[in-house]
Image (cartoon, rainbow, N blue to C red):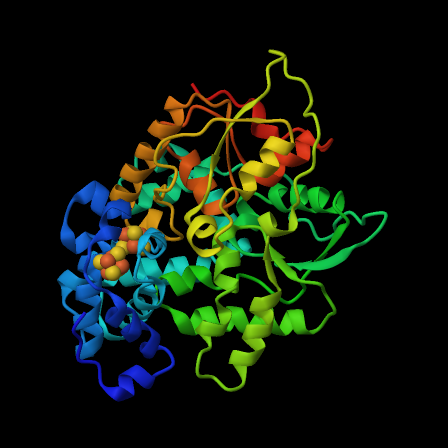
Length: 429
Ligand code: SF4
Ligand code: SF4
């Protein structure tokens, strides 16, 4: 694509990769069919190709972007389906991440929008504040269920949460320890579903992996990063890196795919910083996703009353498919554990969760969720499984969900002799 970036802009460690992405785009449009927002809205400005033009103009010119450009860039899910589909290897991630930072620094959003984004960045990154939010949502449940728009999306997420037990601080030690891996506490997952990390600890212990809580770390920073708030994202990343450097580990795990893909990209977050870039690169090289550590284990799950094998729909998060490139790994684990997989249409399309997107863009996010749940319902599974807390919470709040929904580790744990997940029996009429 023709561009007018200056040599200085091209040499900038943050802006340069974004400018190179613009240069690589040949405007062929192959990516458009894979873009969830284009599929739903049919507007070129809500396609990767259209957004690339908007972002190019915005970044080339510098200064305050137009409201129109912000509107269409905000509607991008950062699902990166377009990056996977592109035959010219356009690194759309570098472009959209840089565009979000530019908007954050140069565009004055309306007061309500600024307040909402500030609250999301401050509250959702801190489990203690998330727990207070959950409590308020439960107390105000009668009102919360009828709230419209963004407030309704937040309240619904709180109401659907069923945290079981406290956040685990200690994990089972395998008889023979093959690897000792630090586990990040994360943010919303610890408050909404601490049972996930407990299940992960048991599953990995059966494979000789001992988990050790990474003291001093917190959120991975991906939530503020997806809103262009990179100063806050860097502050969280520095905490995690410092905490990891204090011990001797064989890797560092976080049990949400969206977060592990963010941690693996820490080196770019600090690109151009002579002190932090190399430290971030070391941390990123040690970062692991649950799907990388967990090897398939052949077992027979406990029998059900129906005596039929459990039919499982596996929803692969976009971060798993397009960033981590771990396609098929979850499915292989489920099949080894004796479950019958039920494939469904459009499994490559985002469910609409996308970090804070489900709160910031509730209508579009809701449309994508109901489309996803409709495709899943047509496959008639008994249970729905994913590996990302954002997808789990978002799908759980959908009208079209008729099955229990679990993290992959919870179902594997049960199949391998662990406790039955509390919501495996929940009727979803
Ligand atoms: S497929 Fe790649 S080269 Fe073609 S329009 Fe999309 S981003 Fe540009
Ligand atoms: S990241 Fe996803 S939503 Fe954004 S342009 Fe690419 S395919 Fe579309």
